[in-house]
Amino acid sequence: MREKLVLGLGGTVDYEIAWDSRVIEHLIREYSIRASELDASIPVMSERDLVVTLLAFLAGGAGGERFVASSDIVETFAARFDRRITLGGTCVRAAMAMQALGVESTVHLVSIDDHVRRLLPAGCAYLCSADHDTTDPHLIVQFSAGARVQAGDIDLDAPHPNRVIYANDPPNERLLLSEGLGEALREAEIFLISGFNVIQDTDLLRERLLDIRQHMQQLPLDAVVYYEDAGFHVPAMSRYVRDALIGVIDVYSMNEDEMQAYLGRPVDLLAVDEVAEALRELQLLIPAATLVVHTKYWSLALGELAASYAASLQGGITMASTRYCYGDDFTERDYREIDSRVPSVLGTRFAADLEDRMGPTVRCLPAFALTVAAPTTIGLGDSFVGGFIAALARR
Image (tube, rainbow, N blue to C red; front, side, top):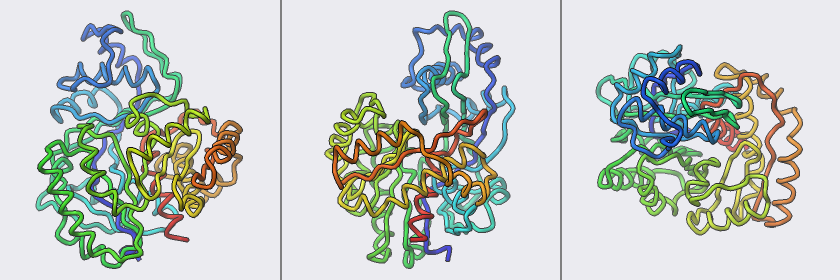
C-alpha cells in the first residue's frame, strides 16, 4: 500500500541543462572572470556570481546546492542552454526510482503545478500543503569527468562527474506541512524526512521542526524514520535539525560532500585510516542510531544495527548506479542487470579493510565498476535513498 511508505517533505520542478563549454567560456569573457575569483561559497546575487561558483565546483569535480537571489537568475542562465523539465526533490526522485521496481509510495509536496501533475507517475500518490499553483524552477547543471573550460586565464578540466543545484524556491523555503501529514503517518512503516536545508529563517525552522514532531506522534512505534541530509543554504542551521530530530531518527544519511562539509575538510575516500577517523568525528557531531554515508566508491552504515542494513545499502547502491548508467527512464530489468555487475576493485578492498579496522559497528559495501560515456549525475543521492527504502520495505 502507498500509505506504508511516506516520503517528504517537498518536491521541485527542475531545469536540467545540457553542458556546453562554449556557453560557459562566452560568459567568462563577457563577465571578465579571472581564475583568482573562483569560489563556491560566495553569495549568488547575479548570473556572474553563478558562473564563478559553478567554475569552482567544476575545478574540484564537486557537487553542491546553492541559493540564488532570484529565480530570474535561474531563468536567464537556463535560457542559454538546451534544457529539459523534470521533477526533483529527494522525496519525489526517490519515489520515482522506487516506482521503477513497482514499489508505490505517498509523497508530501509543498508546491504544485501542471508540470508536477503531468510528470508524477501514477503509482505515486501525493498530499500537498499548497492552496494554489506556483512554479519556482531549480537549475541543475551536470558535468562529466573531463569537461573542459578554457577562457582568459581559466583552464579547467573536471576530475569527476558531478552536479550543482541553484534555486530560489519560496514554497520550499517555507516548507509548510499539510494538515493531512499526521493522518498519512498513522500506518506508515517508513517515513523519509528531507528538505529542511532550504529554510533560511531560524524562527521558521524551529516552528517547522515543532510541526513535524507533532505529526510524527502519529507514527507506529516500529516505523523506521530515515533522514536524508543535504547542503544547507545557511550551514549553521543544520544543528537545529539535528538537535530537534536526532532522538526520533533511525537512519541519518548523507553523501560524501555533506560529510566533508560537516568535518570542514576534504577526506580521501579510499584511505582507510582517514575515513575511520572521519567517521569517529562524524559520530560525535551526529550521534544518530545509524549513520549512512554514500559515496562514489562505497556506501556504509555505522552503528550497532549496521549489519541489519546491508541489503538496504546494496539496494541504494544498485539504484543510484542504474540511474547513473541509464538516466531517468530505467526499468527493473536495467536495475537487475546493474545488480549483477562486479564491484570495483578499489571499493571492494577499501570496504574489507574498513570493516577489519572498525569492527562490527560498520557495514561497508563497494560501488560497482562503471564506465559510461555520458553518465547521469543528477539525482544519484535521491536514487540511493529510493533504493535503500525499497529494499528496506521489501525486507
